[in-house]
Length: 472
Image (cartoon, rainbow, N blue to C red; front, side):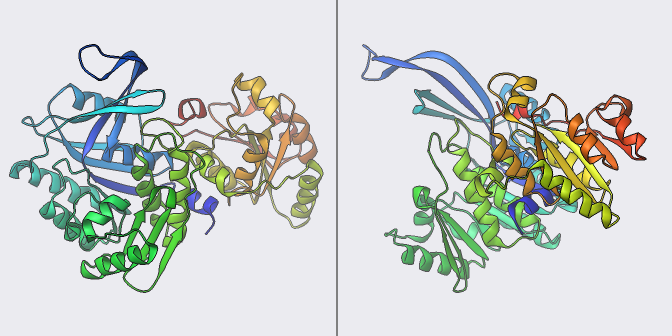
C-alpha cells in the first residue's frame, strides 16, 4: 500500500488511547538579562498556549489523520481538568473518558521558552499508584471502549496511571477483544508491556530497559531481539533522534529507517506523533515497515514545529510524493478514453491546501458518485485571491502531487481563473460534486452539467476540519 492509500483507509478507524492525560502549557518570552537576585535568566512574558498533552496529545494526533479516538485517563477535580476537557471538546472525533480522582491534581507540564529554546520545565503532578476504586473504573472504561476498537495504544508517561498490573490487565482485555496493543513505554521494566504487538521506546528508554551500554546498530538489534523474545513482544521500534529509527522483531528481521527531519525546532510530543501514526497505519492492515516509514515521515514534520504539534495527511504526502504535472489536454484525453469505455466522469474542485481528513472525506464521497473523478485545483495565484496573503501553505505542484497520490482521485487539473467554469465546459462531467452547504443550483457550472444530462451532488463537509484552523 502507498501512503495515499493508507491515509485514505484510516478514515473510520477507531483507536482507544489509555494512559496519562495532561495539559501542556507553553509560556513564551524574551530573555535579555540575568536576575540580580540569583544567577538565572529573567523571562519577559510575551504569551502562552495550552495544548492537550500526553495521552490526550496522542488522541489529537490520531484525529488529525482522520481516526476516531477514545482517550481514557485520570484527572483531578480541578480547573485544569476542565480546561483539558474544553480543549478536547473542540475535536468532534475525540471522546474523552476522564476518571476523576479528587485527591490528585490533573497533570500539567509548564514549559518556559525564549527564542525557540526551552529554558525551564515545571511539572505539577502526583505519580502515586491509582487507588483501587479508580483502577477498577479505569479498567471498566477500557473494557467498554474495546467493543468497537480497531487498535489500543498504551500511552505511558510514568505519571501513575500505567503500572505493571494495569498494563497487563489492559493488554489481556485487548487480546480477549481481538485488538492489537501498541505501547509507548516509560518503565525500565519491559515486562510491563509483555504481549504488546509493538513498543516504541526512544534510545534513552531502550538503554534503561535493556542495560545497553553501546549505541552500535548491531548491539541495539541484539538487545531488542532478546527483549522481544523474552517478553513476547512482536516488534520493538527504537527511535534514535537524528539517527532515525530501528525496527526489530524477535526473529532475524531488522530495519534501519533514516531520519526524515529536515530541521529540528522542538521535539515535544514527537513520540506521540510516532505512535499515533504507526498505530493508525497498522489499523489499516498495511505492513509494519511501511507503517513505521510513515511514522518516521510524520515525526520529521512535527519536530520542525513549535510545541506539542501534530501533522496532517497533506504534509505527510507532500514529503513522500513527487510532482507529476498533468496538463488540461492530458485530462481531456483521459476523459475521451473514459467516455468511450462507458464510464461516468465526476468533477470537483478546491484549493486543497494542507490536505486534511475533511478533504479526504469529501474526495472519497465524491469518488463514490462516479467511475472516474477529476479534481480541479486552484492555482497559487487563484488560492491567494480567494484566501488572502500567506496562502497557500503548499504550492500548486505539491498540492497536485498530493491529490494525484490518492486512490480516490483519477486526474488533477490546475486552473488560474476565479472559478473552474472553463474546465467544466470542456469536460462536461456527468457528476459535478461540491462539498459544503451549497444548494445544487448555486454551484458554478451546474447549468452546463444539467444541460448535458448530468447532475450536481452536494456532500456535507466533515465537522472539525478546516485548513485555516489546522494550518495556523
